[in-house]
Image (cartoon, rainbow, N blue to C red):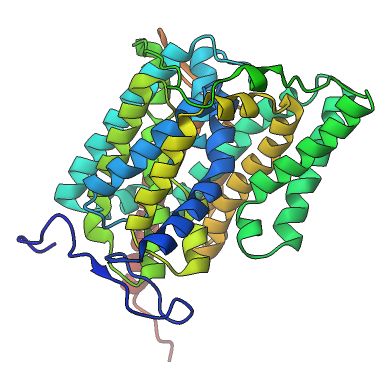
Length: 451
């Protein structure tokens, strides 16, 4: 990075044709188009950003509000050079469930423990960002090559599967409604195009919600949705804030999620770099640091951990608009939504069965995304070291293999992530050394010529 480069680029108005020429990171559109595109990004993040806090027992209203603030802070802290929306991260779900004993329904009674652990994770992540600002990302890519990052992403989805299945097994009606939700989301994902497909979680959930209302409220087959909270809620008001509780065991359980966030966001930033045609590597450290600080800020008042959102990267891929100023607009929309208790009351009426069905899809997609990393990077599964690293880490994660050392517990995601990293360093180095010795031995053999 040039020594005298200004923190912010010199933003300039976009002069091209939107149907032909992409809008670059350092360009901005007229106010009207910026508002429309910003609203589109707000809708794109909406489904996942609401679902994640509900699955951890957090307040979705507060989470939406904080993600808006976090996205604007991210813009400022990265100098407006990384087009991203900071939404609530699914990577925390397993660790928070382990740290708090949350069963997946209603408000989390031990939310303070989750917040303290999430703050610790944010600080670790920010520290990694500071190191990357000084040293670059080479050491991270060596520590976590595609084999490891793919495994880590898959571990998140597999580890969360039992919690999801349990949440939709209360009765047969809930189970069938989870199936209906899966079908609704699947239909949107496969048979629609454009922005509708980008909103598959939101549209799929709304469709399933309508079916649930007909079957339960109108026909009486299940527990009816209670709408009384909506009429009693105010249109505008501050969300309810929560204070963190700093417990060493909870912090040690949740802090390792920072490793997962690094792996996830490194992939996101590389994808954005490829789309824009701009080398964003010099700003990776800024992005990690900003995300870490925003995660710490969020948890300090009751919000979830944060991460850059693939949903919004997908929107950029479709629109070819990479302007970072658009995300400031999206952040402002999120803040306005978060300031409406009426909005929060609507979200609270979503039945558990529908959330469970959506979770099955989301956690499955997370798992498949990890496998896609392996496919895209042509991981060689003919090597025994590759097979062992993948096999051991995946089963540890799926089975929630935990380590207990005194008062400290390392949950399944943390244990499996650690296993993938350590096994990769140990087995690949050993295999390379053996291959080198074998090659030298073969070269040292002098052929015998018989006359």
